[in-house]
Image 1 (cartoon, rainbow, N blue to C red):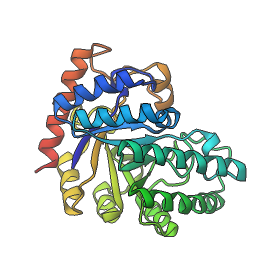
Image 2: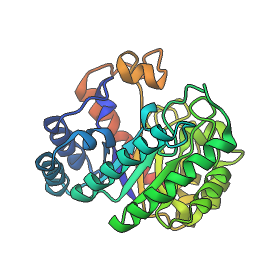
Image 3: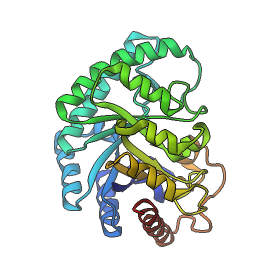
Image 4: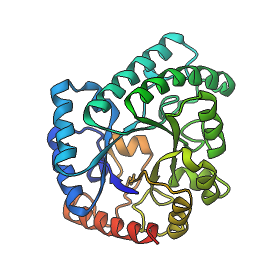
Length: 294
């Protein structure tokens, strides 16, 4: 497994420029991370020179760059509006091209729809038909680049389309694409799966990406609410070799606090103190490696 982290942990904004990507990448490499999760929309907005600089960041610090997307509603592949579905398809084609330039092997997130859902439209059967039609097209593009599309299974408060592993497996099979696979997240699984260990094993070789966080989205080990050793054992049982990427959200306020619905400080006294946050993150990485590697 490759242990990963994104850039948004140290504050409450999704914004990140190349200078910040570089400084966080240097920090993660120094801590012993193997993977760096970058934002799809940032790649979408970059020109080719900027994408080459992003690629260089990964190479300089020995980090595999995974790509995460929480698509806006204007890119919704499940939309009843064919123009929006077309717009989303073209959007992700450009993202996949950018990923090819930077050498990113996996596009992860709620690619099948938009995030978070506003639940204005909840015709699930129609949404699946619309989404799968476009995902077949994107799957072919991803295959040509050697990229996996890892569809994130979310909880009921964030989507109505894929809320457990069994649904995700069925969806992937209907795309008939070798590139379309699954992202499981311990936070969402803790809410929706009857047994998250069984879900990991059910996903099997369709599991292409994995997000880790406590039941309330703290860093792994902060409250030890989950059986991390058993989760690691289940991942080893299916010979999982992808990313195990931390996705903690411990700060209220700002765009992150609003979008993730963090309404109180979860930092246990660290606040915005960077040194304290760094120490928390290092401790969590050490904890996760110990539990996952058995």
